Image (cartoon, rainbow, N blue to C red; front, side, top):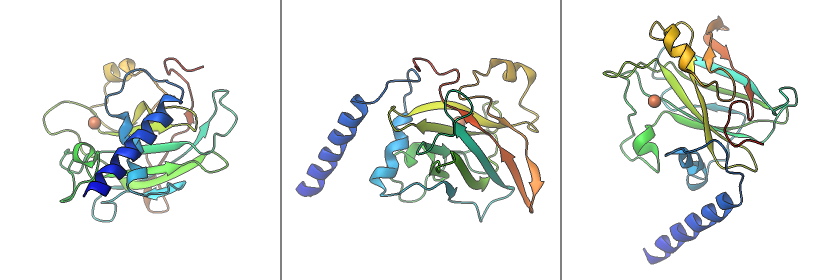
Amino acid sequence: MRRFLITILLWTLQNNIALSQSKQVGGPCQDCEALLDYKMLNISPNSIDTLSGFHENDPKIKITGTVFQKDGKTPASNVILYVYHVDRNGIYQPSDNPTGWEKRHGQHRGWLKTNKNGEYTFYTFRPAPYPEVQEPEHIHIYIKEPNTIPYYIDSYLFESDPTLTEDKKQSLKNRGGSGIVRLEMKNAIWTANRDLILGLNIPNYK
Ligand SMILES: [Fe+2]
């Protein structure tokens, strides 16, 4: 038990030192450190991932894209993306034995690391809207560049979502570029593309 506590303590300390040496970008974020859970879970993020619940839920979706540097042209490799969303009841539902931020973010989450061409792909299912609060269906995304702290960008939103009103669209900050995607049926799965531009509309980004 004692060894376990010391390991956790050292791990937290290492994380804190690493983060204090990273570029502080993106402004306040209360839960962006959740991105770092992959270390605790011994996950090595790949450029392709399938979130838990994909096989059990419909409609299934595939989201692909390329992450670019601030110039909008140079592909950005080795960028970690953390995505999470509610289940088909609109709930951030953890599994029976949740680990880390799963308690808050639910079990439908995953990590990606862009490949040498800046590309990423993930498979999941379309989240439902929240049951009570009027909010468009969305998939949260936080990112971490090799030299930054984790920060959030605009969530993925769906063009076909009737609750995505004109007012809501106008209120978006377009962090990393617009998060609104259009789903199209391709190879029997609803597919969307979203490219990201690092630093676009991100506070304190140099
Ligand atoms: Fe949310």
